[in-house]
Image 1 (spheres, rainbow over the protein chains, first blue to last red):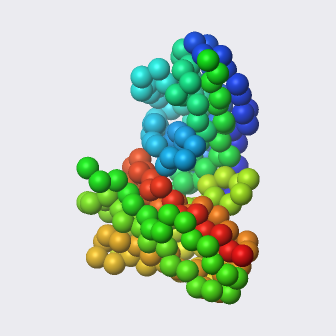
Image 2: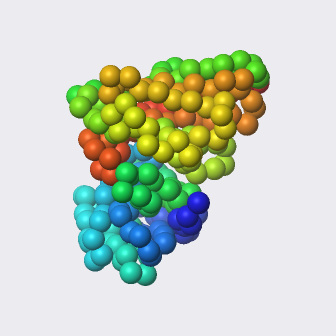
Length: 112
Length: 113
């Protein structure tokens, strides 16, 4: 089992503040890194699939960067809203078939 | 359009019984994945299918677990002689092709008494 680590485990953010958190993964044999958002009582929802070193992706107020050489990805939430409250999961694709190794997630709670 | 569906949504069973969990992927998606999340744990890969074949079964926790996919569509995950440690949420996901973003179903919450 490869180490995919996310930090922090949880964080509380005031509405309107921006935040970011980290996913670290093995820097060798990189195929892709996925980010998912999992709201309570819902299904995980894909945010980004990142494949190239230096990739930056954006979806609304959420963006992500990728550094495959050093093995980390950052996810940023700009101007957090209560509806951004969720667990954010990163997943490292460990083979060319698409098998994913998930991190434990960062739980984000945005309070009004 | 219709997303990934799973049934049942909840299943309570007695230790030692067999259970069958069903996943209906998004139409046209060739790849299908099974995961589980045990209490306090992260998402754990179980098995994936490309079409009807499962190239990698290494994630299945024991030989009590099996899965099949027929017609390149519906998949069933069968757990024989259930144990209490099998209690978890079982999630199914599908993607257009292997390696692409995965679309998850709502999950089946399995409780083994």
